[in-house]
Length: 212
Image (cartoon, rainbow, N blue to C red; front, side, top):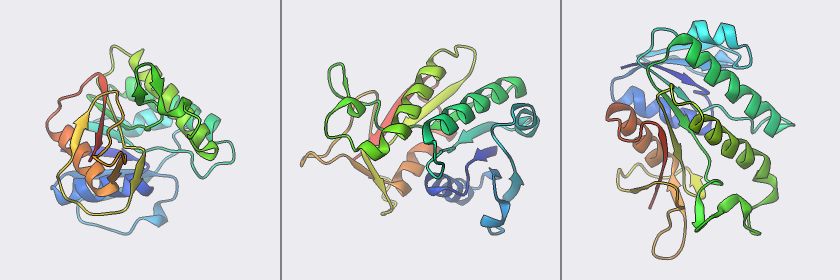
């Protein structure tokens, strides 16, 4: 497939880029700083600012799918920067007539008990709350877009560098945990699940999650 990847130089975006290229997809990386990405076969790097909706819409035209790994982790005002940028991505995708939009989501909006989301539990780290709240509102925005073919993949509570095993569980709106109660997934296996969804859509119009 010919795909556009927003945030292709970030933590999760890099894993998505590597997985997609390894499977033979053609990737156009839309990034703030193109110098951060080395040349790779099948990769085109383009400078983009997601907050400039009209320009972004022009850049998104013609792709088979758009993948968004956009985040605001490096910004002082994470919540406003992320949510503003995400709204612009959605608007640009609609203007461009994007066939599919696949989004990197957060774990904070996953349920740990009926009606109780991880973000709302006392043990949720305060420093991650702005990012998690932004991701939760992004999911709500997508759910209000019936005309947009979207999918959002939430990771487990902990996503970190590890191994690409290809062995994991998929869920929907509940946080996944292993037999010891640990909720985790490697960024490599997250990317496998994400690109699997790209290649074989099974969750269009909804969120799903991945973990061990």
